[in-house]
Amino acid sequence: MGSLYLIATPIGNLEDITLRAIRLLREVDLIAAEDTRHTGRLLAHYEIDTSQISYHEHNKLTRLDTVLKALETGDVALVSDAGTPGLSDPGYELVQAVIAHGFPVVPVPGPSALTAALVASGLPTDAFVYAGFLPRRATERRRLLAELADEQRTLVAFESPHRLAAALRDIEAIWGNREIAVARELTKLHEEIWRGPVSEAREHFAGEVRGEITLVIGGASGAPSPWDEERVRNQVTRLMGQGLSHGEAAKAVAQDSGWSRRDIYQSTIDIDRAGREKRDDRPQRRTEIR
Image 1: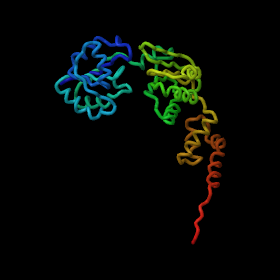
Image 2: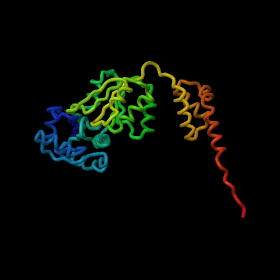
Image 3: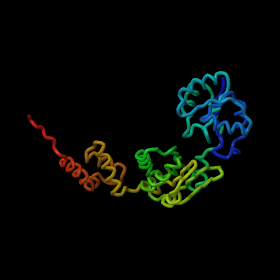
Image 4: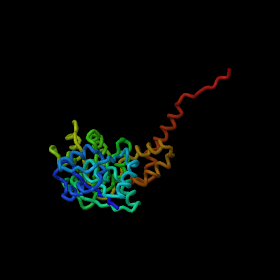
């Protein structure tokens, strides 16, 4: 019976790999790689000729049986394109299946963009929250940021370069002008770790941005602060748009905003009135009898 080795691989610089990882990549019977071409360059650099199969987001479920069958007779290594497999990469379902079938799962620690950015950020590292990749859709991203607005621990998230400007804009709008570190192209030739307030980060990264991005953001300071009136009104409007009554929306917002239900109701009473007036102004359909 074989073991599944979760092997961390370089996030950029090919020298950032452990001796143990190199040895195991040579010794296992099969390597399940997120991108066999990408991993092939690493294997060629270290003159490793172990067989590979692809294991990525689009085939991860159909590959389970292949990996499980291989484990019956030998060891298998799981690697992602960069860093530790299973962290915002395919691997969770495979680890679950391997454990369920009684095979050992062995972590082989090494590079991780998450920890590299965190320790170099200059922000508190004693406790942090990892949010993975920020949602692609703006509405989902803003909803997540709103949920984490009062989190006092340092926050770490991944972001793509072409969505960075929008993400920074939403972070400042929802969280305020917090301290942030933007780590780009970690361990690579053009590595950059930018530190400062979010408003200045927006200016710095206003142009074309390239490379992998890791964001490290300071947590909320002190006790949760009450929402401003605009945020209260926007949230009530959103909830009413989902079908809640004015009173129900005010009650829901009161739980998180620091406002009383009565104050919310008074501040946003015109939202309900405007909605009724808009409905009343709609042209009425006439039915003609011929």
